Image: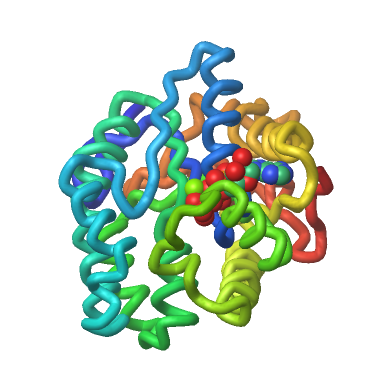
Length: 259
Ligand SMILES: Nc1ncnc2c1ncn2[C@@H]1O[C@H](COP(=O)(O)OP(=O)(O)OP(=O)(O)O)[C@@H](O)[C@H]1O
Ligand SMILES: [Mg+2]
């Protein structure tokens, strides 16, 4: 049964986000996961932030050009929030309402890390913005792709070839080390939603690690005595607490999936 979400629309699908530093492999893994879910006959929508809807993509171009950086982290955070509202309304919520798996390459945790922890914006403001933009449309599962900042930057550099760095890639290595620890802090604080994936292996190995987590957390039937995910009652805000609150679904903060 679909349940109306607080911020518009019924919600039946599943919302997966990929987070992590530059070049961690988020876009690569988002594609691979969508392919694998599609092979199961599940509808998948692959999207990204900033962007993910026509208007938000326009804002992405401005944000990643660095044009907004001179206005300060607050203005930048507000523009990210504006892009997110459009993305949620025009891409994510409609897809979830029709039962699709939405796989989003970066989402609210990137705002917490980039603009919050490293942009020196009061975390209470970041969380307040998140509450009004994301509302009940919180991810069911967040995959934190973790690897040393230098490795990710080298991958991003190789991908770029001789092209120009974007707004964030051009920050120093200390910034990127800080990002890594912010993402790990977020994961440690929300172990029922977040899962840290060792992203230093091969793409195929990482995809396999991700698949183990997705199968266990989102696709597998409930343990004996429990009900199946597809028939479990969902709370009024549309969150899939059948997934989140099962202690067996929680990662030990020390545990990392090896690719
Ligand atoms: N496991 C891997 N090992 C080595 N190279 C990889 C791996 N995964 C992805 N790559 C390559 O590294 C580069 C960055 O990968 P990708 O674009 O998927 O990362 P990203 O996390 O989306 O980066 P960004 O934050 O810049 O968007 C690409 O050229 C990709 O082909
Ligand atoms: Mg990417």
